[in-house]
Image 1 (cartoon, rainbow, N blue to C red):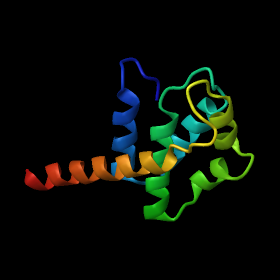
Image 2: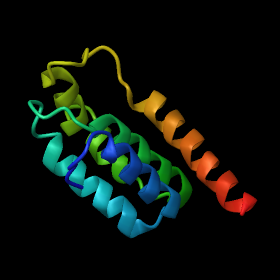
Image 3: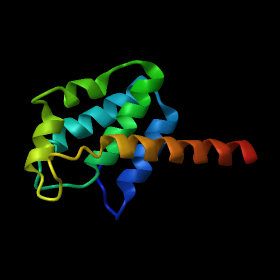
Length: 112
């Protein structure tokens, strides 16, 4: 999911969340495996986590759980990333964002 233009990570995340397959969850998890280890590259980690949680809620896969467990990559990233505050977890607000964007996509598709 290399971002070659600004904000493309949000578009990729919404697209994968809208499809919502196990393969889409795998792609999002692979992104997190790579970029949660890079707090110096704070790009789309929060919205990708929201998309992965969205898919998990629909499929019951639980892939986001391994990142969010105590001491896991998500907690480490929150502590190490220069732009975040370790006490504030942006994942719930990004899950809400993904839900709203996927609902918008569904609404647009139904209007066709």
